[in-house]
Image (cartoon, rainbow, N blue to C red; front, side, top):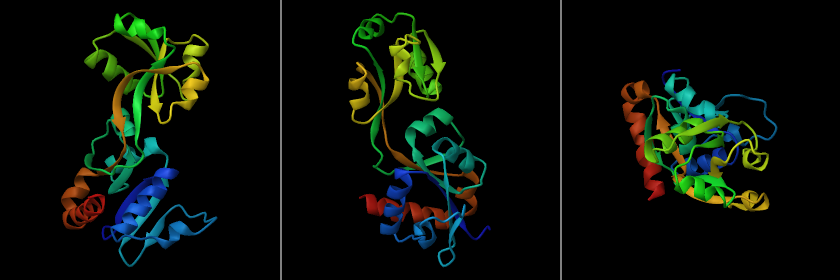
Length: 213
């Protein structure tokens, strides 16, 4: 399979947006459009491309270990997973914000750098933000489900999570208190693949970049 470029796509809306961008750049995969297909690997034999769909947190893992040459995933996951990959392009879609959120009263706790509990799906991002940027000691509790529940049931004081419209926060009496960083979809590349398949990968990066511009 050394002749192929293998691309890991994040399941869901990100995969659809990624394929639209790749098609504008001249890369196609008709197999991906087949409704109800149970295939796990989708191939374009003419262009020697292989695609597969994965959950977001797994994409950097596939790329780091060489199961995929290229991946497209949100920058939140790149920061949280901290895998050894090259981040080569900001694709400009999937935009949202990573924020510290909570009830309005929690703003005082943040301003005075008090010891607080933080619930988040992103413990590494939360730790980096509070420890290294704010120099605030916090107790971080990892949750996998609805982190908004944390402050509501008094498991934590604030949450660190992705915010798109903020409607879920408002419906639950929470608000954005601080912004950690902007988030968007990024293209990442396996470090060995960048050396072994340099021409094809750099060509793809250039073609995609041209479409972004």
